[in-house]
Amino acid sequence: AAATKIAEDVVAADPLNVDAVIFLTGLYVADTKLDEAEKILNRALAGNEDNEQLNKVLALVYVQSKNYDSAESIYKIFLTPSTNSIIFIGCNICRSYSNSCW
Image (cartoon, rainbow, N blue to C red; front, top):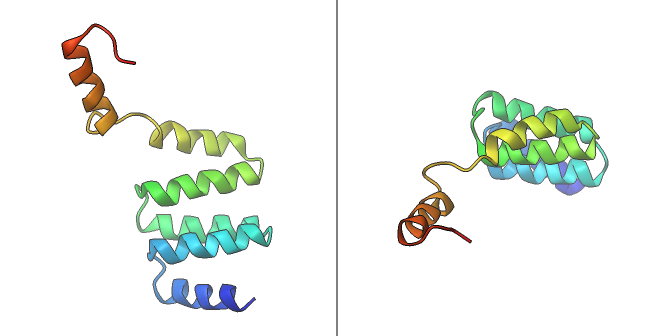
């Protein structure tokens, strides 16, 4: 209702505002407007396709829509450990002191 209208106005003024897009997506999902949620996320991703937050929220919307293949493809990209991640670095440090990690 009112919150949705305000969020829509903010996103219309700044479609790349990640926080506003995610907030509006949450409102759409709560109202079971999954097509609208997907649309607004894809619009934001068109200007920032590598944004991890937006992609992970889109994957959640895909899961809600039972579009599991699309969700899986996003998860495979963004849940793959990066060589720059603290977990990867920490595990390599751990391995240098012992032969196992966790």
